[in-house]
Length: 89
Image (cartoon, rainbow, N blue to C red; front, side, top):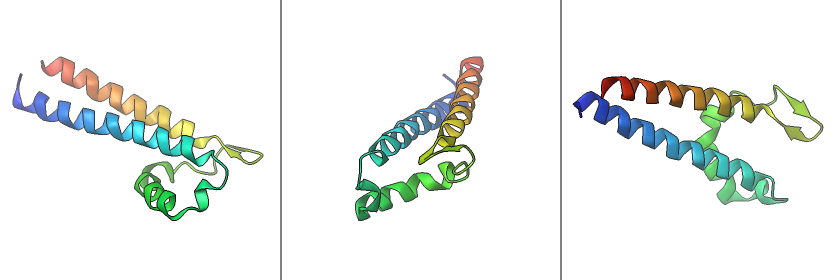
């Protein structure tokens, strides 16, 4: 395996783990009363730099569906990175 594909593989897996982390935090936010907790606010700030750009675009009642758009774009970028890694190996 080439050095570049190895580095890109590490980046891919870090981003994949971060994707799972974002999903878990969004699911936790659906639990009543959690979003006011200090520990949740600290964890949420680690995903707001990305998901925050999409908030408020598609809101139905009290539910903000725009993180789904952010996840679709994130997953597309991960898929593109995966294709690049496969091309290099």
